[in-house]
Length: 485
Image 1 (cartoon, rainbow, N blue to C red):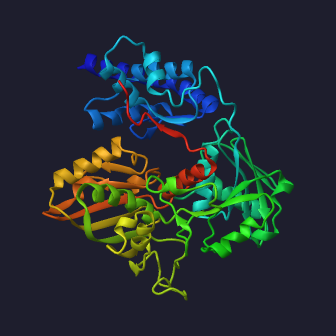
Image 2 (cartoon, rainbow, N blue to C red; image 1 turned 135 degrees about the vertical axis):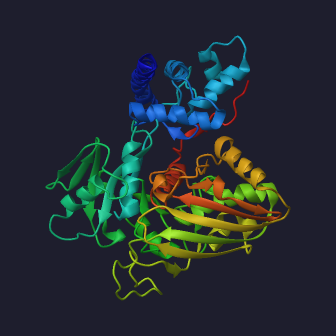
């Protein structure tokens, strides 16, 4: 028995050591080439050795066997030799594709051929210039966007967080803002170091220098005075929701475009990345990223609509409370929201059902919706009660969604899980728009009920970043979309 115990321990130590050796390679690909590596949607960048091992173990849920660390090492070395352009690369897909090809090509030759759209060998198109980003407002979503932008800084060729704009809240405002970025009761501590320069009103986070600008109006800011040009302003205050109000940002010197982190009103494009992000054009100066719920349910509704057709559906959202509600009973201009968020379930309205139609017009008029706010700080659930055009089975629905989460163009948006022990807090930090809980699916003929978890803070913020990258023309190509033998 002692020999068995020792053998297991030694095998673990060997795997841990190899995982540690992979980290510098993963980091080089990201810093030098802007390449984000992952395994079936589980990212490898900024992971510890244990995180790398967990990502490899996850492959067992997809293929039935864990991914070999030695295979990943060979693919990473091949990528470093090739030097691809910025991209989001699935290591597991490259490994399986090479094994299935079974020809005489070396791994380097195979990877070069499989990724020919993103490899920069003979002629490089030059270093990509970054796009300046300004966060207007620094609340829950603003701070998470800052964390993601800082962690994605890479080689500086993509999005560059240059400033945040807030109204001065009082004494030690800058120190308090930095403290809220450093510590988060839900998402944990900031991964890295933060320094504050009170005199120059800047925050330095992991090498990203952020100018803090105090202003009560978008039109009063001259961003060029801080070296910021042609910036995209991300308005996460929710104060303005229509074109007229959001256009105030465009009057500020140094601003090129605006992105709203809420559903827009009027004719503004409501974008759910993965669904209609390809409708963003260079002429779109103002774009909205819809809502967290709309982002969570639209991709799932899309794959069900495409497979079976949806005659009618109801979206019931069980949503964590938000800062708009009161902690204790007090006056609130909204119905029911004046009652204590920490003590009550609160029925409220949601515009998600109507907003889905803006991103997915074929479902216009076919969905209704409602919401219940519950006493949890983060992670929500959408229950999709759908009447389909043709009958199906629970197994067919689950398998279809699982395949879409792994192999479709929506694999950045949809995740799928089957666990009898999973609860809401397990999804904190998920960068997917929504996660389908397969064990909860109910199906009777042409009636199906699908349960979709979503981190309404971090998952939504990840979607916002994807829209922001699309507006800036810097969204990494997700490859290989299809391995070519």
